[in-house]
Length: 154
Image (tube, rainbow, N blue to C red; front, side, top):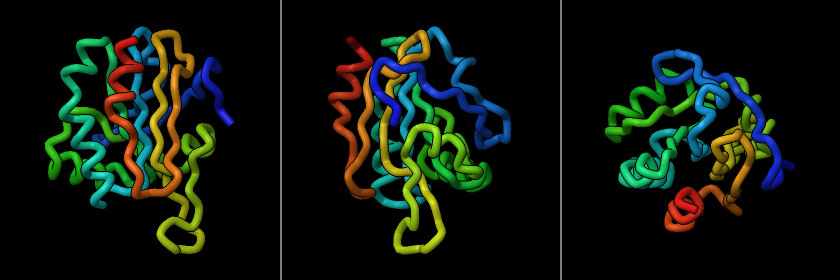
């Protein structure tokens, strides 16, 4: 399990335009990695829209948001369009990143064999080390958004 202070696992994931995005290319900024189970579900839409609403404050703190789910880039683009998101939603369709961060949610929604991303937030510092993490007890639980903003601004 990834612990605070450790170097965050590198990843190379497709954004909704199928461009590769890596953790390392964002070094020098704080990164809010927001893993979520599935696009177009109620809680996931609320969560991503809440991060969108906080984006100016996060950007002022030299932070960016990267959403990560296991949906295809094409679905993620439709999700971005529907919710007017301006930050990337990355596709971990191979589930390598959810495994590396320890947030693979197996048999999601009672679908035997289907692995989604467990709702979780990891804040990575400017040097690529984990500052803070939160992992939901269940898919319906949302992060403490004020806590995320507080950690990013610390």
